[in-house]
Image (tube, rainbow, N blue to C red; front, top):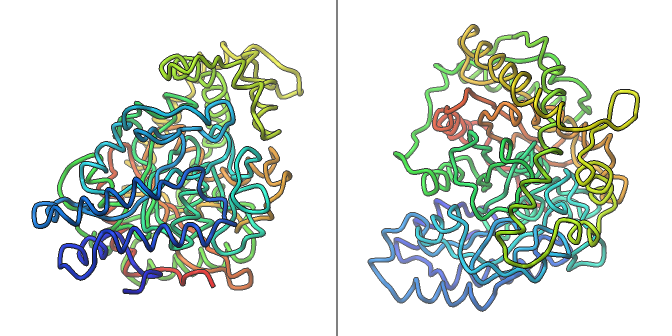
Length: 474
């Protein structure tokens, strides 16, 4: 078995056919996790628990084989609760919090037979896109490292899950996404992912930023694997590949700004391949997009971050207050955000001063966000398109260091992922190429109308056959 090319679907088939065992697959995943300690991909590696679950699966025989993820190793981001394992949310104050129950999304995967090998590292409190977290490390340097180049960022905030899949430690896992957090690390590490329509997955048992914007999301080797994880969590029929000759996608000029040379070349080549497969590609206009998105993004995330985290901390029973949590934040960028904006309930004004967040939040929820959702709805309907296509990130991975967490880099890397997040619509990330000069992964995103998750997944599965899987890191 070629573990570098193994997908979730292939692993399930190998196990069902008796060609491998869960113990063998899980042992290999654990060995690879330990061999790649310099990735900083894991906060907790549960060797004992994972091998015990694998042996239990193998000894159950035929009955176990009917489970859709039977015996396959996966990983879970460390802000999603897994019974019996610490759930730190990437921050020191919660490193000893051990939940007694699985989050509902994890319970679904476990019931389907998945073997959880560990909890993956992340940007602290999920508040960033670099994964440069100074709270936890297993390698010599801080920061979750890119699967293709250890000097570079893995993206965030679901950094460890992206790096673990990209590095071929596992073929699938869970992240969370508020403004790009399953799609950015998917793009930078060469794996597929889905940000589902908000509300598609239960959010209980997940350390929050914003109840309006947050969602768990599956990340995996291929879009077919992502669809498998989605079917386990959300239910529904198996997704079949779409007929690409009946797919119509739109391009928005503002989403093609700030591209580096490799991303520009790969994206244009991908569009040419889509057209060659019969996909219709049209230019569309969304002139209000940037302005509306700006009125929603920070006002919603930074205002809800306070109340939602207070409620979560109360539920954990740890006795940790939000003030005590903030006092122990390790990463300077996250500490600055919480101390300067979240705790005092302030937002930056255009002139650089700070203003009360509540009026801007109320306007965002009652006026700007409904207008943003209406803009997307009208754009999809009036242009007759299934999705809007764009480069997931405008650039390939950048150097991993404290500067990678700057506000400028944050804004740049969520340039394209943030608007759909604020509208609550689904988006899929598809690996399309290694950069011509950088040799780093580049991703294509497709955002669809609210509730069109299955249609997007069907298109994504069809595109698996067009783009194939990226070569494994060397």
